[in-house]
Image (cartoon, rainbow, N blue to C red; front, side, top):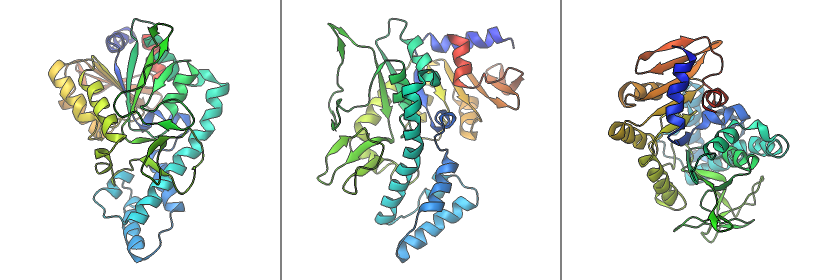
Length: 340
């Protein structure tokens, strides 16, 4: 397959103004921790107290040390509330340490973010809003928007102490015209979302834990993923993400493993019903991603993953994969080179 043919497939996705789905694999190139990094951080830093916590954590840690990924190790475990709070706090600290370092690049190296280039190009058309759905807690997407001078909305009003707008997102205008805005649907929460002691939901754009009286609003893998989603801000955010996915004219999935029950069933449904174009970019496609491509992606899919010094392409014409000598075409910068 020639590069021009691959570019044509990529362009069909890009020109339809895709709903972008971003997983942890998209943040790792920016220095954010992988699931393995997070698991190792928890093993090194978490100190359970009491018999029940120690017994529960020993079970989880043993599973991690045997090679299970974090979600597998935590799935179905009955974790004492105090241990759960420790896991949430440690997860927040692990991600936040790297996220804080990235802020300097957002200020001083705006060209660092390939997502900035993509979003800017998508707004060069008549579109007034873009939809990004993510499972990540970090602020890579927000930094990328800032670097491009583009407004974003996560559901909180602007300010230092941000109010959660549960019923309707804030609308921005430039003069009389609605501003172009990236709607970011963070279905597992964000580093800057917190619950106060008096049960208020607030946004604090901070890079250190504001205090013990604040609880980070992040949904940790395998533990409170479904319990917490019945509450705001998660309930409203997931509903918004569902609408973005259900109405998508195409999909661009970046570093997304197709393991999340909040997201990939909607992608499957849309691809089956409408056969919309979908591009999947990953350093390494997960087993679940390959299963999706084989069974549910329809007839307009393109997937690319790293292969030694080249890339492997998957498409309806090459369902078992086609090795290419083109380097980095599986990455977001590589995708940008095809469509911009």
